[in-house]
Length: 441
Ligand code: JFZ
Image: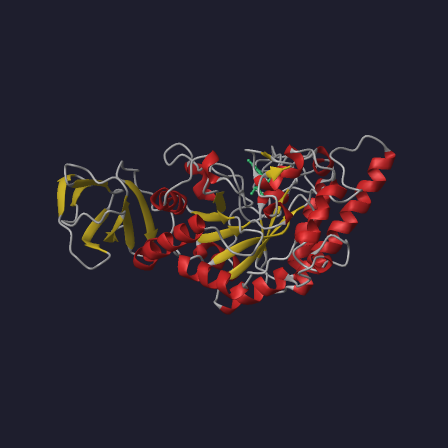
C-alpha cells in the first residue's frame, strides 16, 4: 500500500482484477439470469385486497405484515408446475451462461432444507429441495449457478438493524453465527456453486461488523476454491462499503449497478475492475408481481441494449425473472427470454468472452472486443448509411464483415477515421459488424 494509505484489517484483500481460471470463467460468461423466488410469489404484490406498486418481494414491508403472519404463506408453498429441467432449458435457450438464484431473500424463507431454521421448503406441502433440483438441472446443461443470499433476515429474532445496547450486541453475534452456519451449509451441500452474491448488508449493524464480512468471504473461499464474491457483502474497519477507506474494491467484482449502468463516456473507471450489473424487466419488480401494467416493461431490444452496454464497458449483465407461485414463468418473461435467445444464437460472438474495446464511443452505439476483433453492435442505424469509426493511433481496420459473412464497405475519411457502410437489408433488430484489426504498436 502507498504511504498515504491508512492501515486496514478488513479492507481489500487484493489490488486489481483476479486472473485465475474461475474468475476468467465468471467474466467470460457475461450474460446471466437472476431468479427471485420465494413466498412473495404467492401474494404477488397483493395483501388483504390491496395491490401495492412497490417491489413484490418487499410486500411484507409495504403492507406491514408481522413475520409470523407472513411465514404462514409456507402452508401454501406448493409449486405443482415446477420442473427444474424446464427452467434449465429456458435459460439455455436464452443463451445465459449462469443463473443467480435467491437461496434466501429478506423474508427468511429458504429454498433449501436448512437445518438452522424452520422456515424452509421442507416445512411446506411441497417439501422438496428446490435449490438442489435447480443446481443439478442447470449444471446438467452446462450453466453455472450463483447463490444470492440476503444477510438481513426478517424471520430471525436475532437480526438487528443497529446495535443500541449489549443485548443487541449479543443477539447480533448469535445472528452472525447462524449466518455462518447457513453459508457453510450451502457451500457443503452444493459444492458446484460458483459465486455468492450477498445482499441486505447495508444496515448499521453490519457496517459495525466489517470483520464479519471479511471473514465470511474468506470462509467461503476456503470451502470452495475459486468461488467469487460480490462487493456488496463487504464493509471495512470503518464501515465503508464496496470500496474500502483507501478506495480499493473489496470482494471480486463490483455489484452496485442495479437497474442502471455506468455512463459510457464519463464512467470509464469501471473498466479497471470486474463488475456485474443486474436489471428488472418492469421498472422495479424482482419477485413475481401479478400486475405488470403498473409500470413500464422493457422490450427485448431495450434489454439487449443494456446487455451490450454492460459488456462494452467490461461488465456482466444479469436479467431478472420472478417465477410464479405455481412454478411456471409468466408469458411475458418466456417471450423475452426467447427473443434474447434468438438474438444471442446469431450474435453471441460479440458478447461471450468479450471486453471493453477502448475506442471512442459513437452514437450508433457500442463496441466490444475479443482478440483481433472489434465488434460494432449497431442499435441506431444512421440515415447517412455511414457508421463513423475512430480508431486509436496505430490501429488499422483490415476488413469488416456482418456476422452473417457479408462484407461491409470501409472508407478511410481522415487519419484514424473511417466510415463503415450499413448492410442493405433492414434487419429490424440490432446487427453486428465484425472488424478485423491490426495494431502496429
Ligand atoms: C436489493 C433487494 O432489496 C431487492 O429486493 C432485490 O433483491 C435486489 C436485487 O437487491 O435491493 C437493492 C440493493 C442494493 C441497491 C439497490 C437495491 N443498491 O446498491 O443501489
